[in-house]
Length: 308
Image (cartoon, rainbow, N blue to C red; front, side):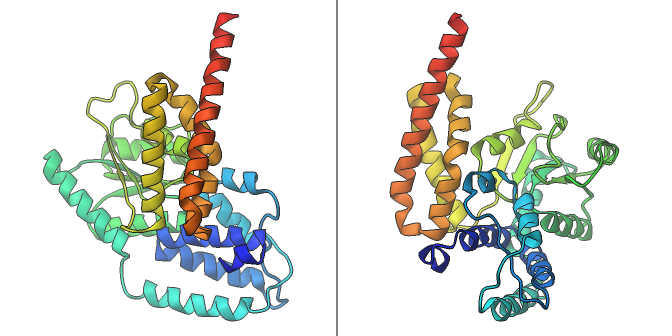
């Protein structure tokens, strides 16, 4: 909120990203803070992020925002180093206390899936926004006796193919980042777990589409790991409420237009939930109105194209 009141766009972007990192895992926030400390350096520089390029920022995945955070430069804030050291201490203390609560919930979910599916080797495709969280989850899975492989944007096509083949054969978990999951077909699995929520509803739909393809023999099951009373839970509730109303009004055949339109405006919804929570309700109404209007206009354009 202080960032918003001071009118510092770069600080606001930083707050938004830090919220995503904290929600993802202790490993993610700790790695970001450590890299930020290195980037800050002895010169007292700190990270500028974007200034007035909000639309570009919203289009980035969590990992891409993270790279901006650790690589950009700008004039230092007065208390930057002191606050960074304090946060690093807190993050290291939490990291030393054991697995995150979200990880415990996830592994409980896998146990329940084995029971309900009556399949000790049930496969799950897990999406996270951050490589640090991905690495943590693969490590914890192996420690728990579960086989796991990872796919992310830094891997070449051959490496991704090897991981995909391993998942098809014997591996139980495929942990993927947004970039890593592009273009892969995994209809031999039917469980998708969203460890982190993307800000774009279209991306959420695309994740599920990795397993919900021709040849899928079982009902697809999707799970969103969000903490009760958290920012993610509130935004997910608003998105579900507003988009359900629009979908019921415009019809299932407009689903693609609705999700595409919603994705253009969802960043403002997330920003309001994090930076100005008291303004979330009016922002939700603006989101719904803009999404509906653009979906209707897109439908009219499609009809005109079909008539020509």
